[in-house]
Image (cartoon, rainbow, N blue to C red; front, side):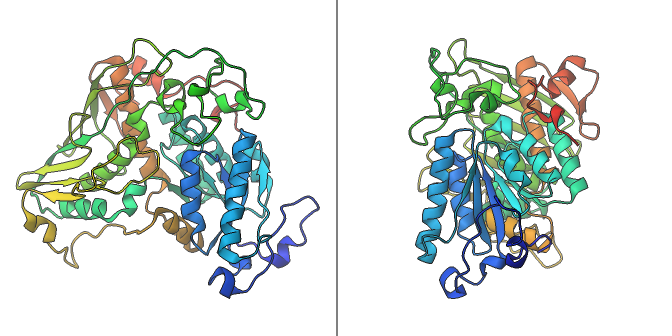
Amino acid sequence: MKRRIFISRTTQAAAGSLILPNIVPSSVIGKNPPSEKINIGWIGCGRQGRGDIMGTMRFDSAMVVAAADVDSTRATLGKQMVESFYTKKTGNSKYVNVKTYGDYKEMLIDKSIDAVMITTPDHWHSQPAIEAALAGKDIYLEKPTSLTVTEGRLLCDVVKKQKVILQVGTQQRSSPQWRIAAELVRNGRIGKLHTVKIGLPGDPSGPEAPEMPIPPNLNYDMWLGSTPEVYYTEIRVHPQKGFDRPGWLRCEQFGAGMITGWGQHHFDSAAWGMDTELTGPISIEAVAQFPKSGLWDVHGDFMAIAEYANGITQLTSGNYPNGVRYEGTEGWIFVTRGSYRATDSDPIVQAQNTKALDASDPKILSSVIGPNEIHLYESSDQAGNWLDCIKSRKDPISPVEIGHRACTVCLISHIAMKLGRKLKWNPETEKFVGDDEANSMLSRPQRAPYGTNYIKF
């Protein structure tokens, strides 16, 4: 591994550094002894993060050694969860002493940490990822990749320059039906692809919420980050007890709603089959319903239409079955999660008998992809693929550029929802054509000292 940290090196670290795990026999922990592990720092210990970090710790090559959260209660619970996992796995209650931080920047200084898993709210994705890349850490970044197109492009440029491994948390890529569907489409099994229909729900409106005292365990100013200062109320942030779906997911201040929250999964999968992973549409238009009152203000029902230079039209709406339907001149393929849930935050419970993969003719699905045909990147686990790529230094299945391009479709769809008119998009310049108002929405004002505008390069 490029930046493997050996015990012989870390034991010479200055006083006050992270407490290192005890060395135990490989028969206890597995094939990778502690000296060969990838030391991981976890940033954002909430609902999504708990699932992601558990999925990562299953691999012997990983060792979670630190946790950071602006909510000290969640940081402590994260520490307890990680330590409990390793205690059960090794039989050694002192196998690891997870260090907690209230500010992830302090974690990034620790040279014994090889990589970070960023599972923060959407408005806190790009900044810590950029700063982690600048610190030489490899990164697992939950989607959406960015809050704005502008900061997403900056993230891509920094990651490429620093040559770190960044895996985007678009876990659908590691569920086989999505790859199979894309391969069949890319190899012409439904003829010439002309239309893609994506089923994606909106969010409901919410109640009015009065101001509440800020909990002493929450650094609320830092939690708000680059977004405007607004009063604290619990359903705007996250539950103080438990890990139910947080309210910030339904506030435009911190994201864009389902168009980014789940949309990046489906737009990424659709692009895989459309062969548009490294580009984008040439036009976008959308209509949407928005709440007229209440704290939660993200979009509800909507319809978005994107046109691509290769002649494909992509339609996205909650009126379609949840998933991606590819339509060609000789048939169609529909792919969805079926009974599989990519994350605990999936807002819709899928029917257990839902077909994960369907087609106009069953023979399409049984078709064998020949050795001289297109074979797409294969991964059986998103976190496992990330860890493998940290060691090999090969690109992961969901690299930053592909993640940014899928997120961009989400973000410009949201801009079209707000403006209510057809917009021309140049995927090379990543700007709208002849529309200053739309281009002004590719970034957001940032509240100092937070935000990508204030990173020290």
